[in-house]
Image (tube, rainbow, N blue to C red):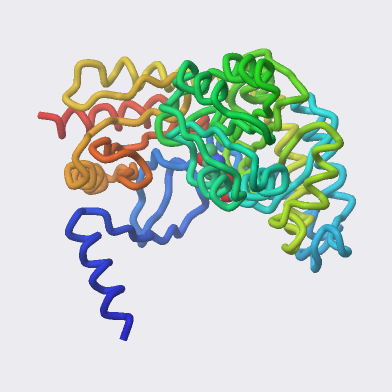
Length: 384
Ligand SMILES: *Cc1c(COP(=O)(O)O)cnc(C)c1O
């Protein structure tokens, strides 16, 4: 029976401290979660603005369900594209300063769809080595040639581009690296695209809603705009709901509607979610106070952990990873915090490179300064 092999693989993972398991939440997502009946102070969601359990969005979702029902019932190209989806696409495009936008059910699917629809055999994808798994899978699925460059190494990327001949070229990158919290050099990448007639796919899963004026995202943060940029952002992180979108020139969007398999061959997300997301967009736009509170918490955490045994990685965003190194040590530290009622996930290979296991601390506008103090004190205690 092949089950014997499966058990062996799982046992090997367990022995390396790499076995993954799930915990069941009995509460909404928030800094104060309940797991198996016990309360915890949590620092691991991507709900950066604290919108996942916002009363206005809960009622927007209820209203959306009352107006459009709960299920789309069909793919967008059949009969599943509702007025709510359509309106949300318009508003998202306008919000990020692009001519058009297209909704996907998840960010993972959006990345698969974009790269596969635009590239094929004979084309080349250039990818940062620390990109999110969905971008990595997208480039492999596209059948384009793959060139990976060292993290944020623009000089190496320039050399790779120099050596590449005919075919379409696409550079793909996280805008905010999901496990590190640092930013891609988007202006530098765009300059290379211009020199080599390439496209740039920016995955702004962790920048949309958080960075830039009114939370318009990483492009606004850097003040860059170009038809060459294909902008992708997710709607289940700072936006607090679910889904993703791609914003680009109309011709790119038309191409995706026709060729992106993860768009064409799947049921549209519930239109009620689009209703909630329209509300979320308003809260993001008016969320300067939330964003500045997150920045205060980042400063508090960084200064509070200075000089400690484990160091925070260099990051200015709400993702503040604490580098531990060894897999088992990271799991042990996460476990010791949990015993003190604090929930921070340990992130291990293959999600991050070997030897860089870490606690991925994320901050949210829903945290208080007292919450962050509690984390700082617990870490200092454990470091002793
Ligand atoms: C979370 C994430 C995704 C996937 O988005 P989902 O909507 O969760 O599928 C894609 N890219 C990056 C960088 C992410 O962090």
